[in-house]
Image 1 (cartoon, rainbow, N blue to C red):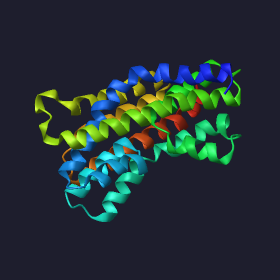
Image 2: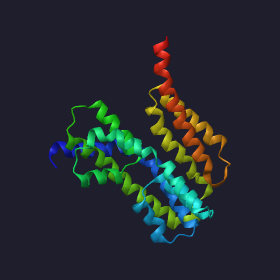
Image 3: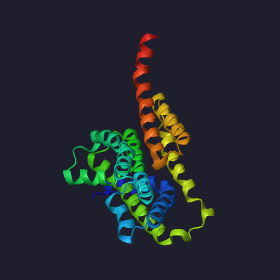
Length: 237
């Protein structure tokens, strides 16, 4: 790693740092839920290594604790993680030339935070080399992985000793809002965010977190509809 890419690595860590406080309580909640679900330490903490998918990891563990059908658990994880297919497509234009092993590592460490920060950086600095883009991504993604794993372990071992007054669950939506709001740059994104958020609130009482399915599908459909209709409206005007 030369001096330039080393600086990109450091920059990745630096821009990720403000988002880490939101990931810590999120990871602790995942650990607490795993502990309450009856998973042993290897399974409860190990899922953060094997799966490393915050929202779907948390939802799937809750469903396991509720004795939900296996199909519901699997579909929940798949639906929540569908967004990573879109993330991968967006990053492919920047990182597709990497060796296969590095592409796998990028995929494994991908989070909402690492994706959002990277695409914003690449757009702001189109002159970045492939090595610089990879270094920036890995700097932020690696530190997020370390913090998530540590937070999950802390939540698992602390378990119910965490006071309810800390309201850790309050930080989960805040951590996503910090990413979503800056990313809303057009009407399609706004429609998807507003529709998905509204449906999630209205459908929160559905069993087995099925409201997540409805919210995800509704948000994608709204964004797609607006994206398809807006060009037509401009042509007709």
